[in-house]
Structures are given as C-alpha cells and as structure tokens.
Image 1 (cartoon, rainbow, N blue to C red):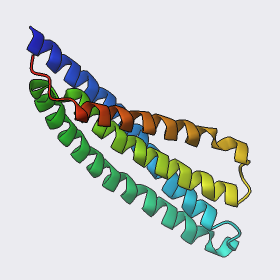
Image 2: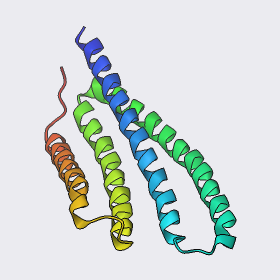
Image 3: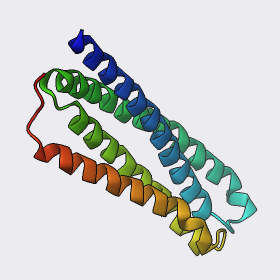
Image 4: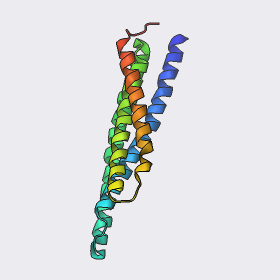
Length: 155
C-alpha cells in the first residue's frame, strides 16, 4: 500500500511539473515574440508585412521546438519521479526539475522585463514579479541541496 501512495505522489508531482512546463513554454514564446516586436518598433510601414511574416514564423516554429523540448522534459521527469519513488529520491528529483523550470522562467521573464524597461514601456516598480521568482528559485534550490545531502529514504 505504501508503494502505491508513493507512485500516486510521483504522478501528482509529474502533473505539477507538466503544468509549470506549459506555463514556462508559454512565457518563452511570449518573450521571443515580444522581443521581436520591440526590436521592430519604428520600422517603416512598407516593412510591416515582412515583420508580420517573421513574427508568425518565429511563433510557429518556436511552438514546435518548445513543444519537443517540453515533451522530452516530461518523459525524463516521469522516469525520474517513478524511479525516485522506489529509491526514496522523489523529493530531490522534483526539486531538481522544478529548479530547472523556474530558472528558465526567471531568465526569460527578466529578459523581456529588461527589454521593455529599456524601451520605456514599464516602470522599474514592475520588477517585483522577477524578485518573487528569484526568491522561489532560491528556495527550491535550497530544498534540492538539503534533500541531496540526506541519504535516500528506503521505506
């Protein structure tokens, strides 16, 4: 019975990983498209068609590439969580994958925030979200390092 509850927990954490991964992929996509839009501000109206074609191409190909990366992450996470449940390293594996996802989220949201701040579209006060993400990332890394120091639980 205990093994079943560990597997249920592993798949619940896997669902959390998938949900966070989908959010991160969406943020990366929005960042890439947003950076392209910011770089093309003030372009002549004649080049508007080319800008829209480039934007659509980046958006479409980016979704496919990011989808493949997310699928690989999902497959790796499932294997890590399932085997981690059996070996007693489930929490460590979850914190590792979550730290990777939160790191990507922090990098891409900060990149877009900096570009929008430089373009004068945001005030510096809007950076609280990045600070919260950085704090959450630091917490998850700390939890991972704490779990890594413990011997695996066999129960």
